[in-house]
Image (cartoon, rainbow, N blue to C red; front, side, top):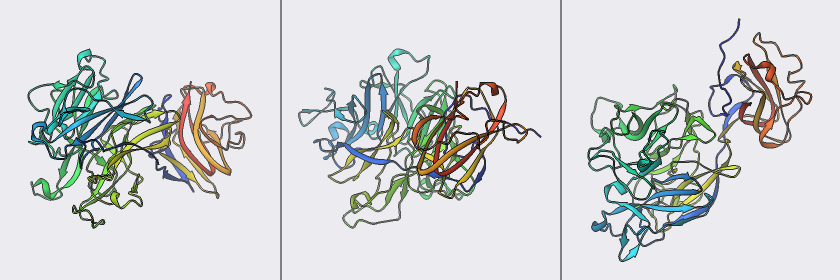
Length: 455
């Protein structure tokens, strides 16, 4: 009996969930944690006091990379509203510099501050990808938390901002966090991911709940649907998620990634810090933006040996993934609320957030039937020196396809972001267009990070 097939077109499919996976024999899903790179911005300006460097956003606009982050004024200067949203630029996404904007001064010194006051606490911009967006509103943002409400902003250049309307976008939530929005090209809607407190009993007191993530939708950025809580697979623990950092994956925009800061409010480690609580972050993925997969419950970035990272509100991931050469660059804060606080870049090779992994003993992965809509199978993989990858095609009746079995596959070994699979030197699969086939991977001391059927 023929099985239902999965349509992936020519999309890049990452090995972060079980969407494509039918049989896993001696293989497992494995997380690929990022590598800590250089510190990109130290919070060392006079207006960057303790509490600065969080709730950040990174994005690319043409040839310019932009970063937005919070600056908390050391004296909570009431004339500036206590805190603001600061701005930095980069030509390569790696080396960053502040851009003084001439908008706000701090004790007579020009600053890189764009927005001050309550909305500067968690100002979160994005480039509006809506094809019907007016040029004067190509940047938008959400901000606010006191009183509990999120407001919308608009801008032509990402620096000079005005309110999108006098009324809040919505007020159901607990917004003292990094709430964010973007135009979702998959849904053709604006989406906003924000924080709320999920109660596990009949109490309506928010403080008794667990910090969690919700989503609202809008067609025009002004009128929004009621919030819907994110959902997870059965058995996934309900943990405090302080932030979310949801973003479509570059080059695989049908897949949403999120890097919530996980908060353990009852733990206390560093006696030099008076505040209770420690934090790290996790990685999760979704194919519809509402139901999320978490096969990896472990930390994505651990606090590490620095005792100043074993305090509250560290390791908050900035929203946004930048393509920097063959790597993805993401950004985290460390040493939160210390005089040494900073923003650090972390990297993963392109599309290598997780893999199907086999050790030296070897294992087999069999995908679900996939409708072939391209001409070649391309994989993102890595092996050890004695490791290998072989791929076979299985037809709609469950039989190995003649000439394209794992035995016919030219042995693959090495470490490549893009490798076309060949069988006796042949890579052409155009004869299978419009038909379904399963992919059988025989892996030995190897990781399969992603696959794509390309034209």
